[in-house]
Structure formats: structure tokens, C-alpha cells
Image (cartoon, rainbow, N blue to C red; front, side, top):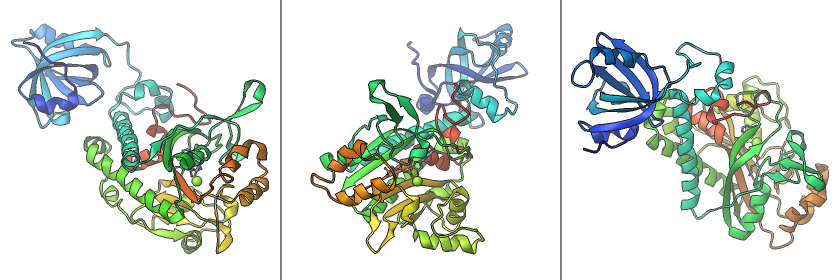
Length: 434
Ligand code: 4AD
Ligand code: MG
């Protein structure tokens, strides 16, 4: 009879049936005359047992124990329910075929330094925790697409090579671009999304972005992924409403689809279950008051860093919006508050549990002359923004959007300390390998 090749995550459908698993040897042990092989195939981990009897003689059982860790293999056997085994199922082995015997595997059970693990990131990805994190990331990205697609947004891909800065000139990666001078790796797709929303109404992109950040914090990468929606005729309040619906959709979807992964990560689910609208909203001034009460030496007009964000988030049981920042700490394109032009119609969304800012959003300047003025104030070269100014010449309208950092969001949902584990191959100022 044909024995089907199945994935470990589908084993509940095959209890008492014979299956084939193709994967790798993640761990092994023996007890008396039994050899236990822990197999992994990317979708899960499975205990496979071999004992002397119908299928193996005692020499064969012993030789299974000698298979080096991380060898690739094809295993056949019968699926049994086994509550005590990893994943809740067990394979009673009938046959093991080694596809490739591994050399001595550098990652052992003992504690390794993060530096060592990062140097071996290409192998570290195989471990149970890293597998869980990146499977959560997968669901986060699918949820992002589902949310926007179901609401009539069009996915528009922005360019990565750009002629100008979007988020400040101090964090630009520059490269020589043929006869055209300098090109820069995109810091944000926003400006292109603004063009696209005037053509398609509601748009979003999900793309890599680059910041030559000197920061070595647990929240910064030099290459990260950002989802950036932009909507014509939305004001800053419509924008915040979209953000809270979006973030809660993503979190609730992961809670539903990644129960096993969150269990592996030992994530406390209560704080995630609370992530439902409405999120609290405080102004920059109110945030400053909270900080002063907590003893922070910070003046009006200062930007908030990670410590300030953490202190503010401690006051709330779900993500919190901080809106109306001083214009001088924010980007050139933000619409001033009509009641106080020193402030802008923006918001940062601060995640709970100390994960800091996950969203930056704002209403954009739609008036041509005001935008020209702001470009000048920021000493940006007007020529390269000529196309962007056109959007204010041909049917301009109020419009708003935001950017959510995928890695910060994944790190928060997974409850991991550093965002470098929330992306398959992190890029940081001191890391370009592997
Ligand atoms: O606040 P930022 O800089 O906003 C923008 O780039 C806007 N153009 C977005 C928009 O309105 N379309 O970045 C947005 C988010 C941050 O809240 C954070 O989650 C993430 O991007 N982010 C980073 N993530 C990892 N490493 C870095 N160096 C990051 N810089 C920003
Ligand atoms: Mg920001």
C-alpha cells in the first residue's frame, strides 16, 4: 500500500495510519532497548521510536542512535497519539533512510552566546524557538495582506532605489548610480504611496526599508520591513481608527493561527487578548506630563526615546496613541495643527510591555506652498521632489497614512527581547553575515 509523505503538523489526521516523514534529526536519546529520534520537518517536531522487534533487530536500533544530529532522513512508521511526546503524537518507526549524514553540528544543547548564534544564523533558523518566531512572522504578513485586501486597498510596490530622502538625511544609505549621481536605499515607501493613493484611493505597500541608524538598541535594524497604507481624503483621526483596527486584527489573527508557536515561545496571552479597539489616545503634552510625574528630565520639544516610550506604555493595558507632536521633531511632510502650527497632526502608536513605537503616522501636507516652504526649511533639494509637489498641483486633497514596522510587531507579539530574531537574516551596523 502507498505510504503518504505528510508534514508533521498534519499528523492528527493520520492516527493509527502509516506515513512517511521527510526531515532532519533534531535530537535523539535512548532508554534501555529503545531509541528515540526527534525529527523536524519545518512544520513541527516529532518523536519517533524504534525498538527491537518486527522492524529492527537490536543492532539496527543501536545504529539509529549513532545517526549524527541534523542528518536529513526519510522515516516511515505508524502514527500514535502520545500525550507525553513533543507535539502530542509519536511515530512507531518501521524504516529509516538517511539522505545525507551531517558533519558534527556546531549548535549544541548547551547555551551559546547570541554572537555565536547570529554568526550561525543560517543553522540557528532550524531551532524550535526560531522556527516558532518566523512562523508567527509569516502569519503577521498574511494578516497584513488580508486586512487591507478585504478593505479594498490596492497593493502598490514602491521602488527601493530612490533619488531622495523621506525620513531625514542622517540615516540614508547612498550608492553611486551610473551617470545620475547618488541613489539612496528607500527609508520609506510613503512618498510613492501618496502618488498611488491619488490614483487608486486606498493603497498599501509591504517592502524592505533601510536606515543607516547608528543605534545599537534592541529595537533597531538597518534593514527592516514596513507596511505603509495611504488613503486619499482621510484625516488624522480616520488614520488612527484604521491603525487600531489593523493592529488588533493582526494580533487577534496570530492568536487564532499560532497557538502552538506562542506556546513554544511561552508567551503570556493575556496582554495580547486585550489588544482590541479602542486604544487610548493621549497628546504629546499629556505624555510629557506622565513623564514628568515619573521623574524624567525632559523638556517640551524633546523627542521620546525607548525609555520614555516604555514609561508611558506602563500606564496603559493596550497599545497607546501619542498624537500632536512638536513639528520640529517630526518629518517635513506632516500637516500642521490648524489650532497650533507648532504641532503636527501625527501619531505614534506605542506597543505595551516595553516594545516601544510600532507605528508612525500622520496627515500629510496637501497645500503646495506650505509643502515647498517645509522642504526649504529642511534644506531638502526641491528638484528631486518636483514629482511629489505635482501631487499638490493636480487634484490635491487631505490624505493620511502610516508605517508599521514588521519586526517590532513580531518581536512584541512573540514576547522576545530583541528584534534581530524577528527577521530571518538581520542586518545591523555590525552584522552583514551570513
Ligand atoms: O516612524 P517612521 O520613521 O515612519 C515612516 O517612515 C513614515 N514614512 C511611515 C508612513 O507614514 N508611511 O517608521 C515607521 C515604523 C516605526 O514605528 C517602527 O515600527 C519601524 O517603522 N522602524 C524601524 N524598525 C526597525 N528598525 C529601525 N531602524 C526602524 N525605524 C523605524
Ligand atoms: Mg517614528
